[in-house]
Length: 306
Image 1 (tube, rainbow, N blue to C red):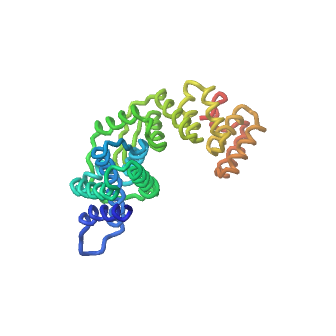
Image 2: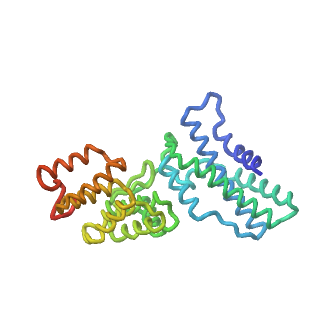
Image 3: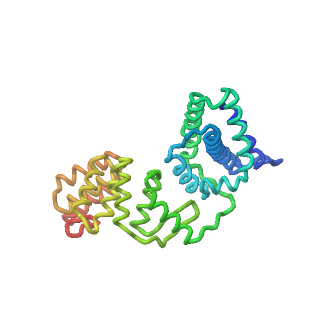
């Protein structure tokens, strides 16, 4: 089965890069991306064909394609469907998928449930183990034809993602929440909107979801930053939760907060923790110097850190 999958993808990819001279590094990387995306699309089409022919209901992990799409946009500017369209391989993909499914059904004398389940698990594992693992290496690919995206198109994509964020990867939820806090959103490698309407309450919803689903200490810190303009007590709780999980940026913030309120013993505890967790020693030394010279750090205003 694995051999057939590799052969099928090779049929899709090689015609795209037929040339006489040796390919450049970027062309080789483009071939790798094309092979990975081609394999993912081949798996998608094959699963759809099995469902249609055998009346099954196999579905890919709903979090898989959103992460694939995000990683492609950030590393090469193309979304998944855009890159599939650029390869112009839809007809070949359908043919190769049908060949794969024909062989599977013929080998087992029909739509054998056990064989189909094994086949689906194999393909799903290949997607996760190989294809997604490659994309997560974040190889930046430049030189593909640029995709024109209007401000309106970026904002529509942003609005759709904010509305349906539940299956998005943490990185994209982070980007959306930051955009709602700051008004700037990078949709892809080359597409940026600086006209996003700020909405701190919606941002906080996304940060809280990121905390609940992914337990990222930096998400607690970001939630604190989003809350601090109107709910300092909740912000302090979020900063503290982030610091307690070892996030050095939050540890510095909390140490500075205690210094702003002249609780130097507590300030020292958190600043020392931050230093042990890799924070810049010179920056922490500067905080201590300000405390010694002025009594509090210079970024204190009414007992708060800015």
